[in-house]
Each structure stands twice: as structure tokens, then as C-alpha cells.
Length: 80
Image (cartoon, rainbow, N blue to C red; front, side):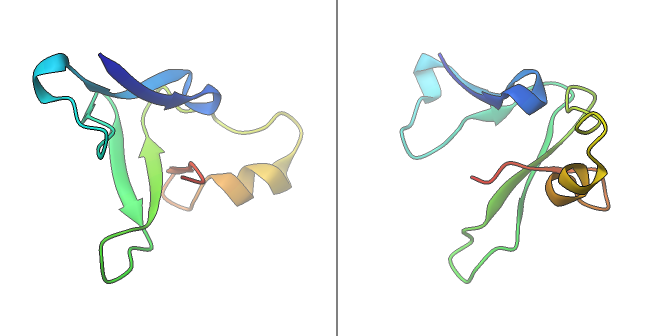
């Protein structure tokens, strides 16, 4: 298996199994995860953003940092 996630998403967001493994992909969304690619260019390349109950609510006592990494729809901006 291959998993993709960050500490801000309390672990894995996507999963790929041996039968569909690819180095070019992060796998399928896990149940409860909503993944989208924001600000895509003409090739479809953009930033991975993640929404779900597993995503942190924000940085404790740091509203500025929270606003920088969570968009207006509640999607976490991964930086990837």
C-alpha cells in the first residue's frame, strides 16, 4: 500500500493498493476525504487541497497562519 497525508490531516487522506499502485499518483481518496486540485494550470497541475473531518480546524491561537493554509471553503492547502 501507499498512503498520502500530513500531520494537519491527522494521517492518511489517500490510499493505493498493490493492484493499482502508480508512482505518478497518490491513490484514491479515503472515505470522508475530499481532495481537489486548486489553481490548476493548462496541464491540470495545481495544489492539492483537502477537506474532511480529519483535517485540523486551525493553528492554536494563530489566526493568521490558519487563514494562510485553510481556504474560504474549509479546504486545507497542502503546499504540494
